[in-house]
Image (cartoon, rainbow, N blue to C red; front, side, top):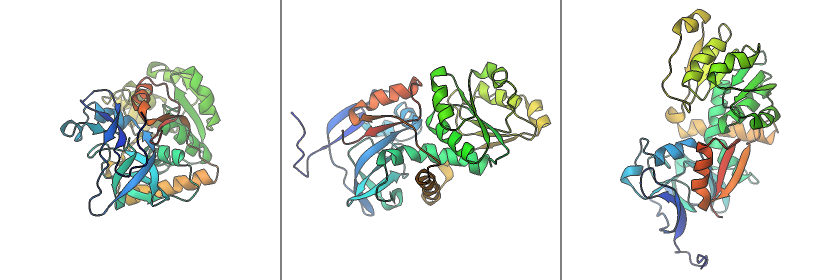
Length: 325
């Protein structure tokens, strides 16, 4: 039998784990969240799927282990009093129950009103990935028209937007991937070239392309390979370690080239600071200079499948869950 939609007190659905490292399952009888003072009940539309969601379900630092069953999801879009809104911040999906659900009680500071007509699936996918890409290219990388930019993991959610933002700045962009099938998408996003390689063959694969900036989401052996590939006075921007968080560097190569290494994390930014960048990104989308590549929009019940696809690196761009389907 289907769920009763007529009753305002009917339980909601949510994608939750019941044990750390367990599989997400669609629970149909989750009590509606009860807003505390200063919170509002938001009807969720789309939830973005991010690597952080996976790490938390596997026991990364947070409160999931002490609050099972646990709802994943760190950012989503929806409606509040009929108005489109973005929900992110306040520890959703990490320090408090997340947003893979039909509803959420949301503090005022974590609600951003969106322009009418905003594509809510695109806006949901834009948050973490878009803000990270913006900082990697503009705040940390300081990319200009005369730069040559190498983007590692260029077919991923952050990488795809970083390619677009760097190309929009006038830079020459090369995107790296480990899958030949993904090169077409990288080129479509504005890269001049795309290389298919692993860390040990990076220099050979670049074939004379000498980057002035490298955007590194991979870490592990890639970081030292990037130091070797970079031009003199180059900039290495690190914002992820999906290959490995432990890195061995040839320090002589680094200091003799005068390479600058910068890291980015959104953990120290305020909600207001991130909202400001988000508005810049929405303006770029409205102007046609940026699009959020969405690989697929899956129903909420396929949250486990979404995590499996992300882990298997079978995604180009972003995955989004439809919280209403």
